[in-house]
Length: 56
Image 1 (tube, rainbow, N blue to C red):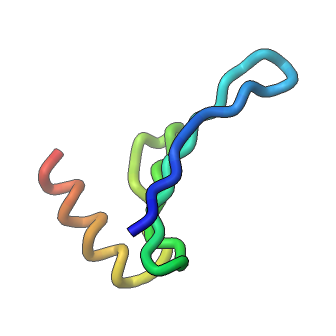
Image 2 (image 1 turned 45 degrees about the horizontal axis):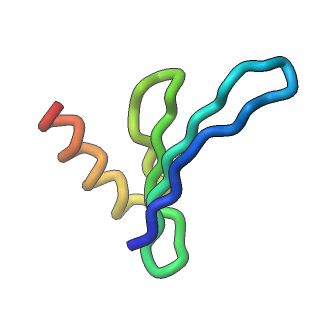
């Protein structure tokens, strides 16, 4: 499992954050800050996303 998260300072001074999970080099899921929801990259990740949303 690989995790990538951080933030970018945009040219207008705003900050954009990101979070993404990968498994064996393939995208698995990411987090959409606007909707505050996980986004599944495929059907396997959809199962995990549904479980995470039930916990929160």
